[in-house]
Image (cartoon, rainbow over all chains, first blue to last red; front, side, top):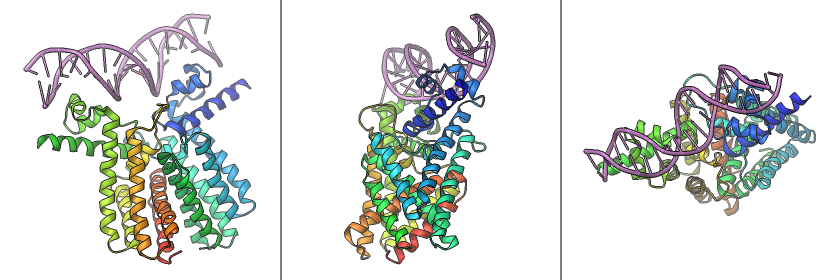
Length: 191
Length: 191
DNA sequence: GTCTATACGAAGATAGAC
DNA sequence: GTCTATCTTCGTATAGAC
């Protein structure tokens, strides 16, 4: 399946570029070049153009994170939290603070189109939903009350995303580590 | 001082555009047009080009927020927290979820330049520092231990930024409101 | 000192050759 | 079906007329 492989390579490349530069600074031209594919072929694989490619890139990254989260949550909410933050810490350190979360990047770069949300933005909203849902379920299994679990899951996702961005700006893992420590204590003691 | 006024209008316009579209989608052309200024005059006011304008826009937005925070913190940490979130909530609602935080936008869009941080990114790092410092001071005044106050301030800023972005993606204030509620309880009960 | 006109490159997208 | 060549628009930045 050279077709599938080439397609997947474009999606992964786009995700990596969005993660680093943001959505608008990610050009189809360069994604194609980086994947060794000609420019025209991207429009064969993604007739919807850049928005379709970006949406698939967001879903790709979101699912990778979700799978890691699922695996970690099998041993409990605290371990899931730890994994969620460790995952972002790795991204920061391995890229010398040049890469962050593509879902967040898409969320703050809504294009000038006055109208309705793009496919990429809808994918971003679904990514956040998915992560929150997984964390909330784990918190409920741990004994956290229904409504509190949902709110606390939102807090974890929001704080992780914000902390990654702050760590990038400061070129230090300190914001992420501080936030992880605060949340770990909060979740461990049950709040 | 027509000079100062024109300059300030360009800075404010740039901040507003970055807040909505992100850094890369904000063109000097359009900022100038929106301010009624000719393109050439922006390079008179900002010889450093786009990076200088963006850095000043970030500082402008950061100081506006910092002043609101200072005012609210005079009556305590809980009130400061409430103001910080109310401020972002207003931005979201008034713009129909099309605007967020320009400091966050700059933090996730570091340009392709392989080298050192841009002036705009340095300004973003300083903005986060300033907000954290103010919140941490208020928390310490409230009796929170030294190291804990710093970590908790980082959590508040990170969670607010992340929640604003999530609310934009979902076009709902729910993520922001959930996060605000969780943090309010955490800070009020002292953790 | 202000602004018009323009240079130069890169963006998204497509037409049409192989 | 793949890829090259190109269309059109827009980006940053500047030169030089008033």
